[in-house]
Each structure stands twice: as structure tokens, then as C-alpha cells.
Image (tube, rainbow, N blue to C red; front, side, top):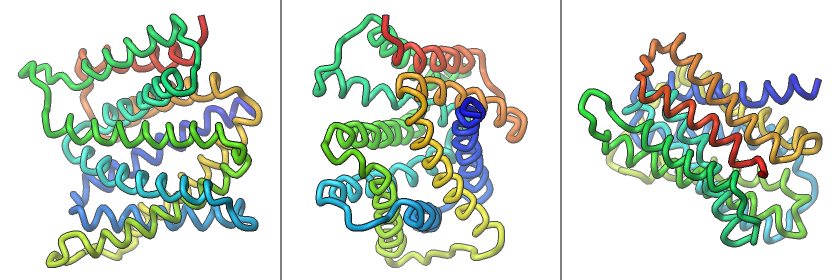
Length: 288
């Protein structure tokens, strides 16, 4: 049963990414609409996680980490949506999966983790796959605007992972479930404020119909369930097993799904990049 859940966890991440991509491709949301969209699914995730994990009062450090993570989550999700407008969903998802590179470098630099051959090879392969994935075969040039957006999203995603790693080193790491609730609640508040403050003269013009409410509600549920699964699976599997397996499966699911559902055409260079990405997320967490 545990291995079924291990497969289900990245599958939920892939479905969440596909739902975000479908919303973006069909609606081309403005910045204001994107922030509102993020606020809705952050609220749904916060309600579910709060109902399960919010007991008593969190420590000050948990509150601070949660606030920072929530703001980073809001900005990441909005920029991620903007990247979907300009690039393939499969490549975008793959690049974000590679953001585990940043907590790896953080661990080597600040947590005095041992430098192994596998980590060096994994870092090299990760950087190589990032370069290959962003090469446009027709012009042999890099799509600059898309690259800037996905690079910022990559940094923000990695930064969130670094915050989680730093939090786990504190003596209050048992509050990490509460941390998730605070971060999504903060993301909701921060996103909602920016949805109305950003470009104040511009109207929100968000369509409150069934479809446009279904997307964020589904994403919020998927985020909450996936995070609950994550916390459970980390009590069964070592992080060195869960994260590379989860990242690799997410890349595979996402690539296959976008080819079938979105008719995305994967170029030879991108196939090479995806293969390098899968190998890198596995090797970077294996010690040899």
C-alpha cells in the first residue's frame, strides 16, 4: 500500500500542474486574475490542512517561517502561471522538479553535509538538463522571456524547499504540519491583497462561473491531499528515497500527459533534457 501511495503522490502533483496549465492556456489570466486564482486555491488548501493540523498555537519561529513561505508560495505560483503562457507545460514542470538542486547546494554550503561524487554528478546533470531544456531547436537560441520567468519560479521553488530544510533543523520541526497550514493561509491573504492592490485602475474581471471556480478548488484539494501524503510517506520512506522517486515520476507523468492531453510536441533536445533531469533527481540523492 505504501508503494501505491508513493506513486499517487507525484501523480497528484502532475494533475495539479496540468490543471494550472489548462486554466492558463484557456484563460490567459492577467496578473490580478492570477493572484486571485492563487488566493482561492491557497484558501482551500489552508482550510483542509488547518482542519487536520491546526491545534493550539504555533511557536514564533513556525509563524515566521510560515509567513515567509506563504509569500514565496504566492509569488512562485503567479510566476509559474505566467511561464505556462509562454512555454510547454511538460518542460516547465520538469524544470521546477529540478529545483531540488538549490536545497542540495544549501545543505552542502550551510549544513555541512558531506560532498559526494553522486551529488557532484547530480548537480552537473541538473545544470546540463536546464540548459538543454531551454534551447529552441529551430533558432538555436534561448527563449529569453520564458527563461527569465521559469528561472525566477525555479529560484522561488528552491527557496521554499530551503526554508523547509532549515525549519527541519530546528527543535520545533515537529510543527512542520502547522507550518504548511500557516504558509497556505499567508499565501491566501497575500495573494488576495495583491489581486486588488496590483494595478488598482485595472478591473479584476475574473469570471465567477463553474469552470473558473472548479479549477482553483480542485488545485487546492490536490495541494492539501498531496501535502498530507508527503508528511505520511516521510514517516515511512527516507527523504533520500521519497524525493528522487517522486520527482522522477512527476516528470514522467507530466511529459506523457501533456503529449496526450495538450498535444505538445517534444523535440529531441527536450527529450534529452527530460532524461537528464530524471537521472539527475535520482543521482543527486544517492550516496556513492
